[in-house]
Length: 195
Figure (cartoon, rainbow, N blue to C red):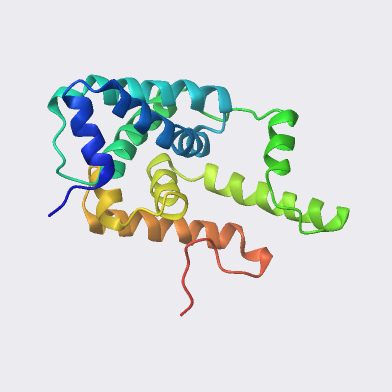
């Protein structure tokens, strides 16, 4: 079986090729920051923790073995660092500045919405984010990996260090909680499939 490109790059890093590490850093820095941000809700802390993730990846290069997809290995490290930060109180209920919110809103494509439509959509997105943020840390991590990083159950299980059935249970409980909290929207919760 041919190794995925990222695993090949990491094997080159293991051999001392810093250019390959730079390529991995360039490819995954933004997704890792985004993932951690969704866990800790603070851009500053997310950027700081992402540095820790890549430092740990670099330090682990000598022992790296491509037993799983590179992204699974990477997000396992990111998950552990984010969960530790939350446990230690570093990432709990961070605040996002108005500038951060405006910058994020400006990244959305212009669909010529009215001001009222834009305000309503922003309020709905903020409510969904708050509902996801209110989930217990492991459920939140599972949802973020499943919905935003598009990892499958096996990859999430390896990242969280649990069984696939435990991941399914975490996701079921998380999506049930989200469905209840967001029922007033009159739509299915994120991740819920039609019956």
